[in-house]
Amino acid sequence: MRPARLTLPALALLTLLVGCTSEGSPPEAEPGTTAPTSASPEASPAPEPPAPPADGACYRLSYDAALAPTTSEGAVRCAGDHTAETFHVGRLDRVVDGRLLAVDARRLQDQVASTCPGLLAGHVGGTEEQRRLSMLRPVWFTPTLRQSDAGADWFRCDVVAVARESRLLPLTGPLDGVLDTEAGRARYGMCATARPGTDGFQRVACAETHSWVALRSVPLPGPDHPGESAARRAGEAPCRSAARDRADDSLSFEWGYEWPTEEQWDAGQTYGICWAPRG
Image (tube, rainbow, N blue to C red; front, side, top):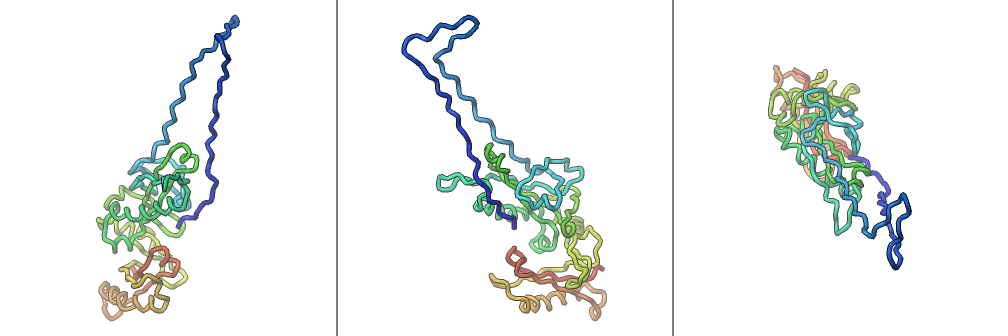
């Protein structure tokens, strides 16, 4: 979840130019000057709002920059080094009940936070299970307060790949439909550095050095977190079966199971993950 920012709304200052006139004819101009006219100057046209970001653009973002609510990073060539790809640019619904909301209002941030994850599947492809077992994640950005004051009303959805904790994986080629391909699932799939529950365990992209792989997810019922005991029991049989089906020896194999914490559940992970050693 993105941290909320509490800011004061910017105030636009309007300066009125008032001309004074008197009865009678306008005064004659002094030598070397131009006599004033009664015509009022034309109003300057309103400046154009900043152009929205381009759909399909690529960016070189750090892990922390990808989690920020706004960004000033410029686009880079998609054929070069990059870590983020824009898959949707939309417009903020800023007017509610005749009132213009600030760009950092919770209602607008919630709008973007629900829209971008819902559109990710249509871009990266794959099944729901393949997306669960990948390290591809949606991130999103809105204009800065200064850009918003200038008329910007866009929001931007990007997709990134988490390489490991606090680091993004460089992207190779476009991510449109990437999980529909075996190569895409192999690079951006979910792997781990050790058995779940051990000190060395860390989720990593399968393109990184790893010793365990994620096999399948285990959906957990109910709107609320079932508790550690129930969540653990729910995964034992399906994880054992998935590991057995993959093993060379059905009588001798290892498997692991990772269930969501309450914090992960609240963030949307309502399923556990089965693991097995890399073959």
